[in-house]
Length: 488
Image (tube, rainbow, N blue to C red):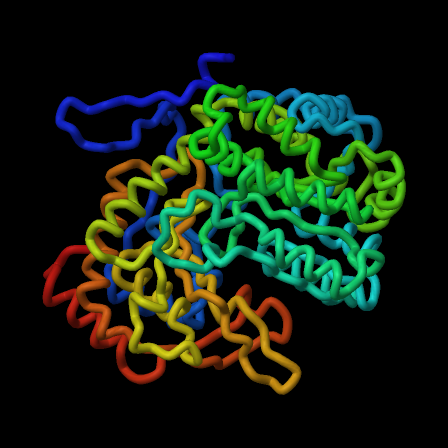
């Protein structure tokens, strides 16, 4: 086993439990922390939608880890030797080699990002009346499936939606429910079973290898394809290695290859897994590959670039190899755990155990006085930006949809996600977030709800606009000035 594959512990003499960065920062970007009065103007200008804030008005951008991760020195260096050819680029063949060695997959289709892969997969395999069982949906995934006429069946376990839990694999699929779904719909109507690594909308929670193995066996028995979204595979690998019995001493590559052996095909967003823009679809099945191949030139670009720049392709190849470095994949989960554990100890409602992707505040408990119909997760996201300049992402009912009658489909959980882009923030910045979240929690009764002023019919959370109900924003700003004086 390589030294970088070993689970290492660094203890502080003081007894503090503190994550230690295994990298040094050599390129920096200046940040701006506006006065609270200006932050108030910015959030009104953005329609209380953190997606519509300008980055220049944000101090810590914790909206997402998608396309915001820090690239390594080796990735940046690789970009300078890109072969800028439309077809047959040498850069593409480096990436194809990385796919084969890292994922152990023989066939690869490049696309410009993860949702482009979802588009092609849905176009090919989903038909009117198809059903797709999954451990949990993602917003764009569900939209693509439903636009193709399919139905999503979420078959998460009873532990998945518990806010406070010590269950290590809340991203597992419920085996009993899976068998019932197949029996109900008929195996011939199941387009594929989808497994999402690091279930995004329920706190970045991983699945176990044992659960994947069991689901794979059921899929094979019914001759159903198993698809995996590997966008957050880094964190899922990390959690299997440190939490699942029998994997602590296995190299990361061996764990990843075993995971991929249970799937028929997979796709990923490079913005997450390799810290670069782009994405791809992987498989060891020539038949599956051929069913999708001709849609790549139609929707994305030629087969050796798929809508990506060759500079990104070079960096992606390097980034995929870095997925096998334990120091690389452990950094984000360690920092997330630090913040989650600290907030939990203070009695602030947060998803436990700490997952990958980010720290998830439970807005439903944080501001329990705000009804779901007034979008508590969105209100909390706006309030945190006002109080701190930190941009998080609403993952609740605003991210949901309306039913045929025009009523909100209330989300299972109301979460404010504070994403941790890899190797981006310092510990002092995380401690600042911790401090402002504590102040906001202590003053949570001041926060009110939101209502729509402009609501798009599809994926409304991206560009929709809202406004506060009542004058709660003015009261929050006034309390901040009372407590912090002239501080930013």
